Image 1 (cartoon, rainbow, N blue to C red):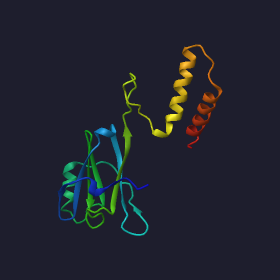
Image 2: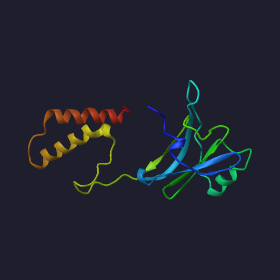
Image 3: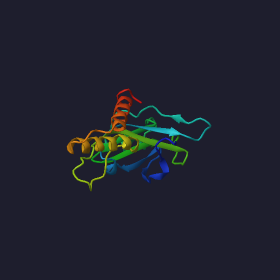
Image 4: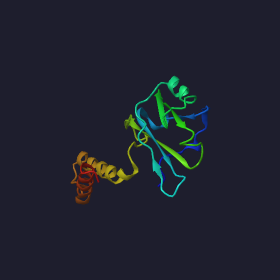
Length: 163
C-alpha cells in the first residue's frame, strides 16, 4: 500500500523560488487538528520518509519560506479544516514520485439514527455487528449467541493488545 497521497493529486496553491505550497481540504476527514505532516520520496529503489514536520506555523511563515534559501524541507499550517503544506522544491519536486500524509486527531461522528453513516474502520465491522446482535438479544430478553460473545471477546482482546 502506498504511503499517503501523491503531491500531484493536489494542485499547487503558490510557487516560489525555493518551494511551493499545496492546500488540502480536510473537512471530509472531520479533523479537528493536524499534529504533523510527513512526506515520502518514492523516486528511488527504496522510499525515503521525511522526519515529522513539527508544529503548525503561520501562513505568513509558509509564504516566506518560498523565498528563503534556508527554508525547511516540509512545513504546514492548520486552520479551520484546511491544511496548507510547504515543500522545498529541491527535496520534494512537484512530481508523482513524492507523497505526503497528514497525522492528527479527528472528531468522530455520533450515531443518532439508522440513516447515519457508521463512523468506524471497515476492519471493525465484525465487532460492530456482534455488538448489535448482543444488544438486540439483551433488549429482547433472549440468550446471547455463544459465537457472538466469542467474537466480542476476541476482537476486544486484539484491540486492547494492539492487534
